Structure formats: C-alpha cells, structure tokens
Length: 111
Length: 112
Image 1: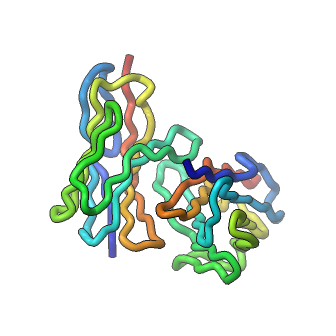
Image 2: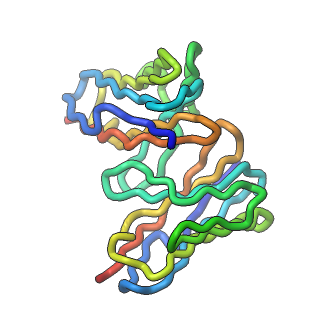
Image 3: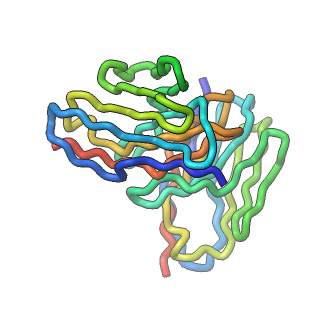
C-alpha cells in the first residue's frame, strides 16, 4: 500500500532563507509526483509536476527533484518570502485513477 | 489551462438536511472525476471516483448511501451529503481528469 510522508510537519523561517521540504513514498511504482500549495481554507494550487522519467522540475524560485528508486522528492524554495507561507502538499500518482497525498508541511515565513 | 470549478464555495446547513455540491470542468470534458475530503489539519483523502454514465466507486469506509454521487454529464459531477451531521463538516475538493487531475477550489461544509 502506497504511503506518503512529509517532513517537517511545520517549518518557520525568516524571510530570505532558502529551504527544503521533504517528501517520501513507500512504493516507487508511480506515474508522477506533484507538489501543491494550499492556503488556509482554500483549494489546491499546483506548483510542479514531475513525471516518473524526470529527475527535476523548476518554476521560478521553486525546484523539485525526484528520486524514484529511493522514494524521495524534495521541494527547494529559494529566497523565501512571506507570501510563500502556506501548506505544501506532496502527492504521488501510483495508478491512472489514484492520487495519494502526504500530510503536508505548514510553512511560515517571518518578515 | 484546464479549470475546475465548485459550487458553492461555502455552505452551512442544519443537522439532518441534505446538501449538494457541484463540480464542473469548464474547458474540457472529463469522463472521470474524483471527490476528496479534508478534515482540519489533515491531508486530502479520496472518497470516491465518479464515472460519467455509471455508478461511482467508493473508497473503503465511505458510506455510499450517505454521500451520493451523480456524474450526469462529461462536465458535471455532484456530491450530495444526505442527512448531514456535524461530523460531516469538512472541506470537500473535487478533481477532474484530463491527462492529469485538475483540482477544484473546494467547498467548506459546516453542519450545525
């Protein structure tokens, strides 16, 4: 059974710091892995999607890597800003009709 | 890009009543839509998979008679919470599949 975990559960950093969020999954048989952002009481915003054949994806200050064999992904946020404060969810797609979410990392960037 | 909408965004209902939540794919057709539930400070859990023209597939532990799903067209799926109770209060998010899953903005349900 596929399980997704995220470390840390919560993170508080001063503005300007670079930071790394971690995601682990137990079964390496996935189609893709996706990082989402969720603001309090809001829906999901897709940040980056990495196909199983890819190693990383970049969008602006965000960089996500994928190591399928070890069941790990990291989301790197450069030069963090208060507007980055949100919950970040990692999700894997083990089959065409399934998306399994991790519990999320709650990020707070202090001005 | 592919857009999925949900209506309403927030709803408050009294215990024992039913409430319907709509999920629409605005610029693509989706034969399959998904319904998730998110309790406070928890992640999203898949409730059911909705297939156009056929019965929904429910995840283990989800009561199909309580959470009625109707996928009436290729752009619309509805979730009806019947005889709602306070413990049904949650954030419900739908997604629609078009190459990948696109998520709606969610519906906050509060049952008083």
